[in-house]
Length: 152
Image (cartoon, rainbow, N blue to C red):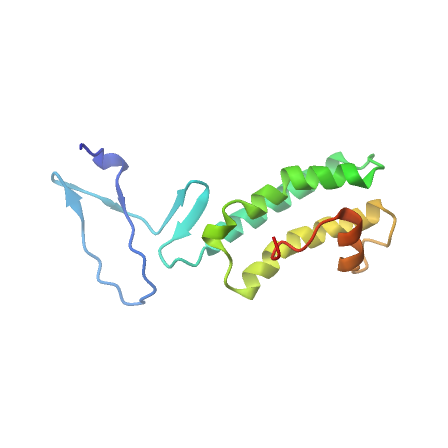
């Protein structure tokens, strides 16, 4: 089997703070050391925290949510907006979640905040309450037929 050394990378998975860095080489060329990599759409870091991946999906989802809000201002039917959310945003938040499953409450809170922002928009569109006021999570989840992302 032949390897393309220019495409090879070295990444060590550890949570130790004191690392002994060694140089790896093949056929006289040094292999590049990396500290995070994106594989099949999931970003892994050398400490296996998945924080870079969660940052990436939250930011990408918020951009898509902004796009959805800008382009659905004239929509009257809340079910259409829910379908767009389920199609455009929820798959980003749920993709490969069994692999990077968030362990920390802070990570879950950040991911759920995207859905909470959607719920605020949905409650405004459904004329349930003022979007500046905190929405009733249960009432909006019943209206949109969406449960928490954690329970999926």
